[in-house]
Length: 241
Length: 157
Image (cartoon, rainbow over all chains, first blue to last red; front, side):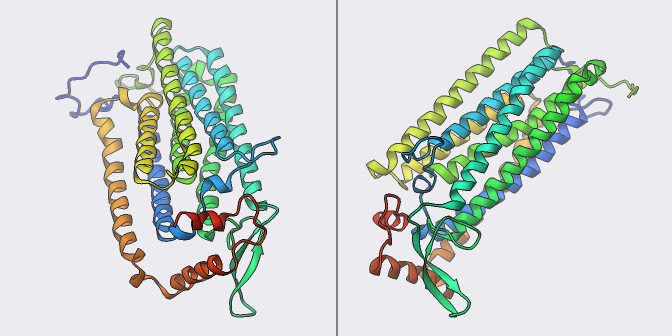
């Protein structure tokens, strides 16, 4: 932050120093995140396109995701609200770990990274639970037109739950995009948890204490905040709108 | 590991003492509370929307997207620390992304408007839409349970 060596902007691009005043590792973590963000942006744009096109048969999220653990009643949006809270919370613990790293406070880094990993695991578990209820569906099911290869036409069938070809709640594309985008995001969360765990072990072994700085925690923190950032958009476009 | 050159140690530039850390932690927790309040507000509005007939209205969509971009700004600027980086680096990260995403959104709206027109629908699309309409008009929902999605869809059109 303010401690950095002051560089004259006119001199900054003459070589010998980084004009961005950042290490190459952090710069390239940012560049990786831009490319990853473009992937998610493209997916969400495609989702918006298809959703607009099939808006008359598109399911409403508040009718689909109504389950909450240990509760019999159907409460729309409550569970996904909890998931969002868990992920924002783990983002805060991550940034506190980074802050502790800037003070070379090994104990602080360990405590906050531990809670970040717990938060990440809780989120992945919640997503698995959400998928389970979406795949199983309701007890009543719903009548849908399904392609029957033997008849060679669409026939009426009662459908329970959703998979890649049929969806009880409406357009099958909703299920396709839901599985793909939340699955892609869940993969990012899972890999984030794994990377966090590796860095956590390195902190325990004192790797960064010997190195004199905890920049690796900062870099993995960037990735973790990015995962939170993507979820903010997925939450809006799948559940709220 | 033993590598030295004349470059400044960029990795250690963000180091600070306990007093500054305390100030930073207060800022971070404030950002957390703002984001939590925004999320709870979004959920309350989203929960109330179907009962008040707000679902799918333009102002609701605008509100949700604005709040989402506000939250994204807090994450990128405060949590990911981009707000404190050098000006050139901010633009290096944000400018290409903004340009590509605006183009992507433009092309989606443009092509979506074209392919959404009934005359431009493919035969398969026309078939699907017609079948859904027949299904709604003729048979309705089998079980008639509390969460009959086909009927919910019909109410709003």
